[in-house]
Image (cartoon, rainbow, N blue to C red; front, side, top):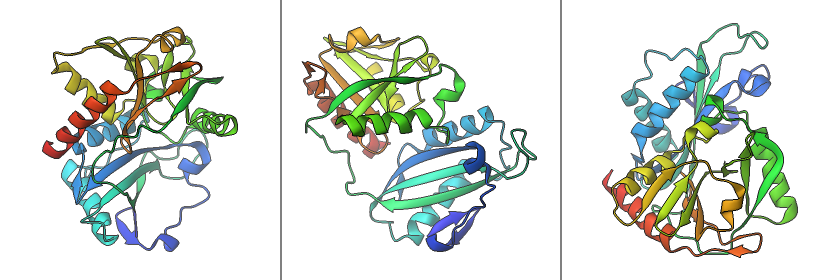
Length: 281
């Protein structure tokens, strides 16, 4: 079942017009949300990021879009797909209603919520080989538009094709200043000694939910010092560890970049703390 503008319909009957602005112009934003046995993980962060994304895109936010209303919409789609006792992945997409060309005819929105089952209730540590490379054919532009999850993901698509064609598990993206911004599907953290670095939002970094959770965790630990600072490609091979974060996997440690191989002690520690935070929060 799919939630299409507040109505539950069978997946095969959930259709959007070819004039839909999300398709025609990428005029759409979305959230990927993890739900465990009916509990929406980190819901407050997802809600406020969605509202911020809609404001940045100059969409008209309906008065009904309260946290409680959208939470109920998500729970309804979970129940409709018999996922109330399972881990599930939700995609909540908001698009501007059709009409106009580059200049929209309206700022009103529609939305689609879909759900699919996931395998594990908690994040599992993956220490399988995971090799990355830089993707340098195209750059992420620093600025607010790069911080939101929109349908404009051409750089990520092309980078993913490059990784697939060259046998890499992931690639890192650069901004126009040649600073490392993030991975194709998540935020980047670099560990050197007791210092952990992650690029700042001002570099064009996606305002990631797990990124925010880890920053909060690290601020409360005495073992490590967190720095939100630009990362040069030259720093990557000097690091002790690299890891990537996103809502679907939690933390993915990097095992190799070019000739450098990495440990995964810190990422394993932090994944345990993240699972605890998820259970309590």
